[in-house]
Image (cartoon, rainbow, N blue to C red; front, side, top):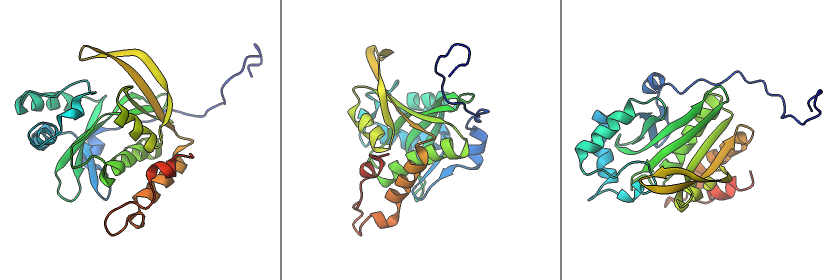
Length: 239
């Protein structure tokens, strides 16, 4: 309560800010899990495999439906777009690489980074067909969240998507992000209106969610055929 006005105030916070995720550091020390490696996007290394994963005849062009860009008419224009993305600091684009084969399988980014308030978003997410709905995909989000909230000390991790993007909305809830509302007329994307659904994980909720991720990713949570015993959505639902 403000002593002068009598108006309510938020709880007092001791927070000196969080560092930005650093491209150079992530080049030297990629985010590494059991199944995936997340390292800054390098077009000369990643473009061919990423184009194949996201364009016909072998890839899934539907990943571009709700993104700000793509699909691309050819591999050359795609590579040029990756080069522009690779030069950015916000968004900071990372390639999701299979840890066993070292094959690029998808792209993620840290974005909307506000270090002084401890807010960061993961976005521009697309997973190729061999990454979608796999343990590697879940591990990708776990590594991103852990780096932002545990290692860098952010207070809030955001997930935003087109409100019509039902798969993204379901994924956010499965990963433990809490729905906070929809911003109407938030963007114009590819000549169409975009209402944006907002989700977030706060630092207060993260320890319990971290434990849920670890329990789901544990080898003993899967039978000999690779089927899950417990669903991540069940582990995160009550948090």
